[in-house]
Length: 152
Image 1: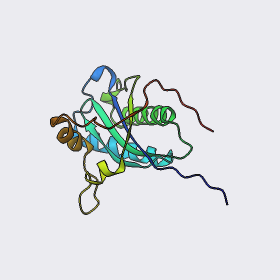
Image 2: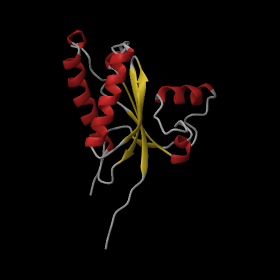
Image 3: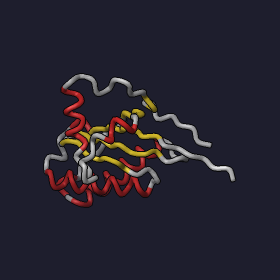
């Protein structure tokens, strides 16, 4: 029986509009990250780690076999932006920047990013520790920077 298999981990990064610190409230940020994890599941691209800071988000997701990075980012941004505005009327100007970064990442790199109990950690901690040594992007190749995609 024919089958198609895929195991591609993608690290996606995008910022709030004009890098404005819309996500200063840790409770709102945590709820947003949980909501985004649900979007990823709905898109058949389960999020392994979702986190970030007051002005940007990091997602480590398994890319679905028939998924396109550009569509995944577009749907995640659109749905989460609507959700944030509904959650808190004071965030009515919330939005995401138009661009994003998406990078392929090896699974061995991220097996160390989980606690021994399997509980997800905030991804920003993993990035801080990697970037402080200056070697986080070593060995990571770009998947898409211009939004172009092709699916079969």
